[in-house]
Image (cartoon, rainbow, N blue to C red; front, side, top):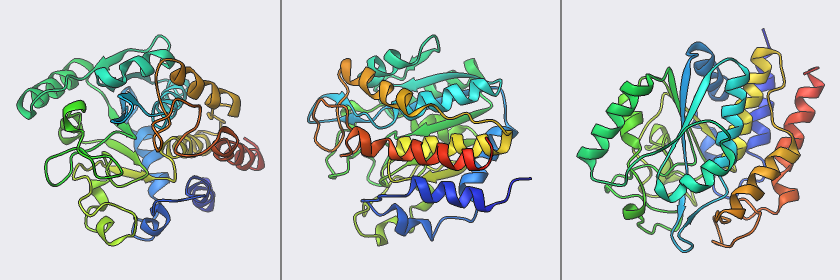
Length: 288
């Protein structure tokens, strides 16, 4: 049985260099939140659907945060014997297909709530997933819109994938700003924290992972799964960077600036790599 302090150390790493308020939110999170998210996926093996893709209005393209973390989680889950498919929308599907390999990428239509609910239901019936994961996927706000970190409404460009999570009993949400699927778990607290939205996401997940960068939250989840399975399931630092470069090559942009460059959430490659480097060092110290 791993010492619970190892999971706290992983949480420390994925919350390092926080610029939005995730560290302030941490004290309100339930104890053992990262370990609980990993355990949920271990307890519900099978086919797992992973949702991602955050549209950047000024660029008309998805951001670099989200898809790399999604495929990293997918690779780890497959290594554990699961099968995976990715769920996104038309705006983000090109980036996902660039790095998803042979795994299916489902395009969720951008339409009204009734049709979105029907699509989500049929998707769940078809795939019969054992669990769902969302990483850096915009979630519905209290006012019924989808908004970016500046509070700008981009609902017309975002599929209502929330309906999938509303219907499934086992899910993990990963976010870094308060407006992502899963942040509904902390909806009562988020408005009181500086730099976080006054009207956060309402969509909840069974377990929530918060991080300074959502990709880092995904890597933290993989590190926790690694501890629990006794095998290092993390991608290499080089692989993490390759995924970013590959999606930028097909249109993805750095989210804060909207620029076509291989940065993630205002972090240059060497700064972004810090998380994976530190997680690998931590696992190595645990003989993994």
